[in-house]
Figure 1 (cartoon, one colour):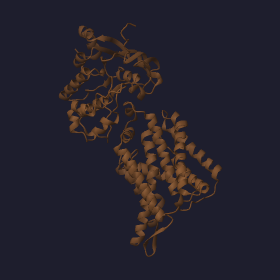
Figure 2 (cartoon, helix red, strand yellow; figure 1 turned 90 degrees about the horizontal axis):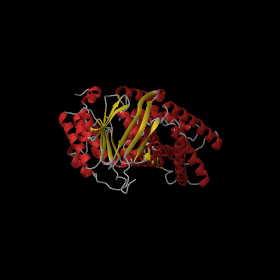
Figure 3 (cartoon, one colour; figure 1 turned 90 degrees about the vertical axis):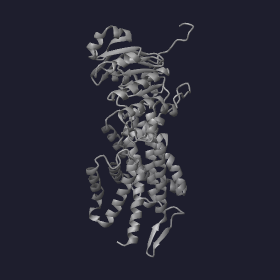
Figure 4 (cartoon, rainbow over the protein chains, first blue to last red; figure 1 turned 45 degrees about the horizontal axis):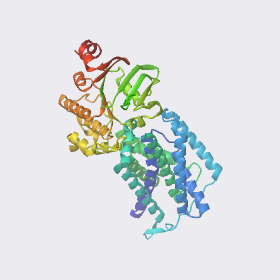
Length: 286
Length: 243
């Protein structure tokens, strides 16, 4: 492996890790604060990709498609939280697992009804549909660089909200002790709705901006869900910082794993998870 | 009703029966807290003191009986809405959040009271608890037990409450720190805030509270002023094991 090739893999790993962070941050907040194991999180990633595919065809503009798709994703999050989860907060985790697993089946089926079982793709939008010449024989997609920038900017915004706003204090406190937050007269119900919609919007948005780089196919959210659970467990449940570093670690591991040791590639992230849990049973940043 | 405006109790709990699953914990507890009043809730461990408080706040709603907070029926509201009626809650175990600084604890719930006034500014809380000022950027969970207790009380005061609920506020504290906390409780009382206090230090309670409720196995066996308890030491000896 020469240095340029290594550099490209490093960028790919970083880009994949940052995308994973967008998905995992929503998952970890929903899990950490609301105590909800949202198995349908990956399905919302898929919905994001299909929404942007569909709207891109109708509107003829990728950026316009995203502008329209994001509010739809927020609305879907609101509906799911108010209509389904609201009745289950006082129940055991098992009920929530059953519900959100049921949601995966429903969402996958709705996807098939609307968009069918075919595989689709979205063209890389202008002005980022070019490549950067890294060395004489290596190029790198400008859209990938743009995607990294967007993910980093969103990560910075999330970090700022969590660290420096009153809402952020309440979110961090809620991840530790919900009842005590309510005991301070804070409306935990609204906080839940906000967190869930924001989490769903983030994962759907990840699906949207990743669409030009991915194969849009039925069930595409299922494998990313498992990877994101690994990220959340490694980083520590409820920790945004953990989700960030966990995502970067897993992004790198998957990318380099498939290049360096293809035969073990599918196992690498689980081996890392096992190793982390042996040393830090509650995750890196819990 | 007289020409004078009728005073609505801050808390009016009537005939509370609370269950944990099938186990019947409270057997008809009555409790009334008037504005500016300090009330002590006495009883050995496991007699239902914390359950009474949690029933009033709606965390463990009573199966029978009624709670009114400033005249508002509690059954129709969630705990946070009841707390917003002007309750500063200092729970057993202090409720300090790890990873959250002293300053953040003191701003996270800060709000004016229901008349739009904010007598308890961050500055006033820090004046009342100078130790917190010295540790303002420390992680709340790294404070000593006494400092955490002060932080919990300080945080309750930033909500500008009309009443505070102090559940075991001096438990596990060194005698000197405990005295400091009692001094603060007297200051809170002097500022006109009503209080319900659960504590094991009877002498301090007899001094600060004008009304006492003694719980035995979820039933009220004494409800009245300090004089009744002082005149009948046998009650305390039998039910609290103090002479």
